[in-house]
Amino acid sequence: MHPAESARPAARGARGYARACAARSSVELRAFFRNKQSLVFTLFFPVILLVVFGSIFEGKVEGTDTDFRQVFMAGVIAAGVMSTAFSGLAINVAIERDTGTIRRLALTPMPKSAYFVGKIVRVVVTTVLETILLIGIAVTAFGLPLPQTAERWSTLVWCLALGTAACALAGTAYSALIPNSRSAAAVVTPVFMVMQFISGVFYPFDHLPVWMQNTAALFPVKWMAQGFRSVFLPDGFTVVEPAGSWELGRIALVLALWAVGGLLATGLTFDWRGPRVR
Image 1 (cartoon, one colour):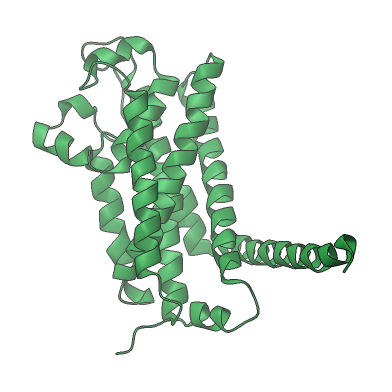
Image 2: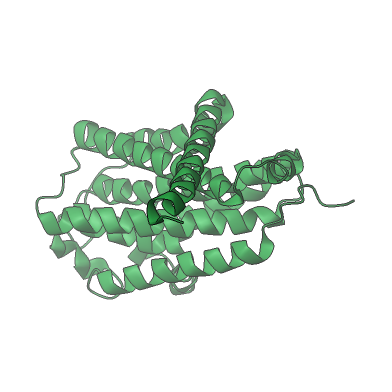
């Protein structure tokens, strides 16, 4: 067979796979933006937190010249990532599993990997949109300074990318613990809220009890919040960071480990058969 002829089926297969991924991604995005509950809980809840608490808090963080609202806003960006990537995905996958959507999709000619590509596109689009909304409001309404150097912009990008991957994969794995669609929000929301309180989103991290700081250091939200503080706050703020520095290398390492761990856990727990047999 001529090499050109043997390449045609492969090219057609690649085009077919790309179309399947694009179609699934389109379905995911339409479903998200048409679901008012998803929009309010996943996309707008962090925005509401930002506006409400940003209007209440005032004053400088003790020992620094940094406005507390700016510290809080950097933390809320991390909360926004967890909301879209962890909470939104965990609830969505649990609902699709309980309603039999995942099982039905597994029986179609669609490549199974296209399902995950669709989820990736959904998470990336919603997380980027969430981040733009939060930064836009924080800058225009509350005076959060934009990053002034290319290095800080690059830190924003990789911290956002690693944080999104870590939270999304953790959320997919966590969905296996949700018994049914009715309890999805009830099982996910407490985890989301506790992570915010112990990770320094609502309160300066150095003011928290040591045991709480050590507990938060085991999870990605604390490290995302610290990474975003390094992007938006002056370097002088490191005097109140537990390590006395931004620890960018450690932030990248912890988030990467969570992404790898989440991927392995997803591979072990994801079930294409849909609802569990009761």
